[in-house]
Structures are given as structure tokens and as C-alpha cells.
Length: 393
Image (cartoon, rainbow, N blue to C red; front, side, top):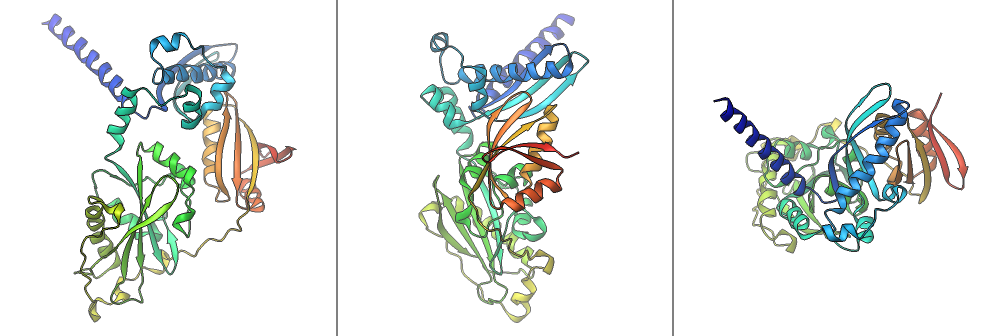
């Protein structure tokens, strides 16, 4: 009986390991998970620095198995640690343990797709490429913008009932972003869909392992009795957004805006199951509102109307050097920068064990300085548009 139990346990362990291997292979080939390092040095801080440098190289060794077969790997030496650091787009600290001289950490690394492809001179090996396509193609990211009084809203739930309607839906194959700091940083509030930052959008798609995106703008006009709600569906071709089709949502029995938006969700799902990018719309018969279902009863509460934010567009750019003592320090700094509206785009140029070099594009220099100061940061100029970013005393 005991032998049978031990054999069963062994089989379960092997199956679990196989499942993890399959899960890893089905992941985005540019994301390397479960990178664990264990380092002992003269101090915990020094051990952490050495461990992080080792983790980056270990992650790259795992990455290159997805681009090179065994024979090719034997003939191609590893690049320098500095070059590998330049290929890293971002990382996540899964767990860490420290003692006086020892550091154990587990990381997830995301590599820059274009830089990695240029280095290897090819796409990932077919088994990784095909697995990723099979996993991501059936799914789509949907960004539900809500427009009223010519103002667009996306992330604020109290200002976007269209987002709330999708949150309550369990649509299979449609991904609604969580709206965390990373999502808000990558896809900012805009007043024109064409102004969505494409670099940030690509990061969002990679984060959710999805290749396609649709922007669904719900336009509500309380002054229009016959057509109070329209849904504009925008297709993204990798470069620009194009209006693919517009759905007119019949009022039916809806007496409140929230109810009407909920009836619109399955209409959009139905449209996305067709060749919606071609512009062919399903037949939607518009019902005229009677007096007891006036547009006033479907209006949004005053607190749901968000005034448009206005920033003077400036094409400023700066390089920020950020030093940190622990991985948690870096993650806290990154989250704080993600929440600054004046930062239009943030690119991690290099990432090492205790330093990050960032290229920041900002919309307004004064707004950026004010926002940094409010969060306890200081800017120390080093040269032409180069600064040390530190914490104020």
C-alpha cells in the first residue's frame, strides 16, 4: 500500500512538472517566468545586487532556447550583462527572502520584442511561435470608452458606466483590462481615439497575451430622443485606429442609462462574432422613446460627467537615472511614475541590480516637476535633459 502511495505521489509530481513546462511553453515567448536565484555575499544588499545580475543572465539563457536550437546555442556565446540589461523591458519581483548575507529571489522578466528579434535575427522557434498564436488569437482586448457632452472617459468607473456594464459581463474571449496602474499608464485618458499611445497599447496587449484590440465608444446624447445611444467600434491595424462600424442600440424596456448599456453589451458581442472589421453592421431597429422613457430618465448623474483634461502638448523628453536599494523600492517608484498624467511615455533603457535608466516623454515640464515633487521626488540635473531622480529628504 505504501509503495502504491509513493508511486502515485511520484506520478503526480511528474505530471505537475509537465504541466508547468507546457504552461511555460504556451506563454508569450518574450516573457520568462520562474527565474529563481540564490546568492550569498558579504551583505544582503550585495547578495541582492549579484543575484539580480545573475537572474537577468539566467532569464536570457532561458529566452534563447526559444530562438536557437541546441546546436545553434553551442556556437553562439552569451552577450555581455550590459547588453542583456538593454534587452530587458521590465521585470516583476514574485518573491524574495533575505538574511544577513543571503538573498533568494524569484522574478519574471519581459524582454523587448524588437530588440530581441534583431539580436537573434529571427522570430521564435515554431513550437513557441505557434503555441503563442494558438493561445492568443481567439481573445481580444476591448477598451470601453464612454462619451457624453463631447467628453471621453475610460478608467474611472464612476464616470464610465459603460465600463461598469462590461465588468458585470462574463464574456468569453473578450478581455476587459483590470484598470490597474500599469493599464492606466499605458492607455491614458484621451479625448480622441486616434490619440491613444500605440507604444503603450502594445505593452498592454503583451501584458494580457492578446494580439487584437477593439475600442468600443458608447456615445450617449441625452438631448436626442430618437437615438440616445450609439456604439462606435474602432479597429486597430497596428498603426492607426479606424472606425469599422456604428451600432444603434434600441431602447427596449430600459428606463435608466445603466440598463440600456447592459443591453448594448450582447449587441457588441454579436457584432464582434461577425466580420465586424469590414464595416458590415447587424440590423438594429431603432425604437423611438416615448415620453415616459425620455432621454432625461436615461441621463448620467452629475458626478458621472468628467470635465475634459487639457494639457498643452509639448514634445519634451528627459533621461532619468533612478537608483534603488531593494526591488520593492524600484517597484514603488515605478508605480508612482505610472500615475503621473504629465508622463506621456516611459521607456526603460537599462535595468540593473540597483539602477534603472529611463527615457521619459512628457506633455508639460512644469506639470511633471510639480507631480514629482508632490510624490516626494527630487530632480538633480546632470547634463542636457539628463537627471538623477531621487527621494526628497
